Length: 146
Ligand code: FE
Image 1 (cartoon, rainbow, N blue to C red):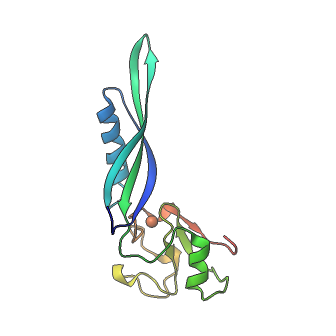
Image 2 (cartoon, helix red, strand yellow):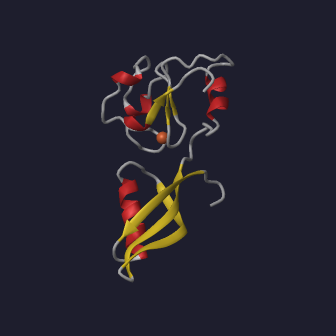
């Protein structure tokens, strides 16, 4: 894994059948909103009992996805300072709650056809985080000091 940078999120999956199915259910749900998933690690396995039988398997897993090719940091406070040249101007900026990517309307997202000067609200509904691929609803407006 050396030379690559990953962001890790935690998922919980469940299945009536097997632990493996619980993992697959979690991964398939995650694939709807995440791309560049690379590996997972099951950290917890538990079950729910009904009538002395296993009613549900539940797994907690860490999912790593690739964020190579970015200089951005998950420490968003630091990123804001860098991007705004030491000022605290965060007006119009939105942050991805999943990976920390910051959408800056002054820069737009030219790689994905978004011109500089496009406000977050004017982004098309099918626009996705360029880093982790989640939808717009996973973004939060940034405020001073955040
Ligand atoms: Fe993201």
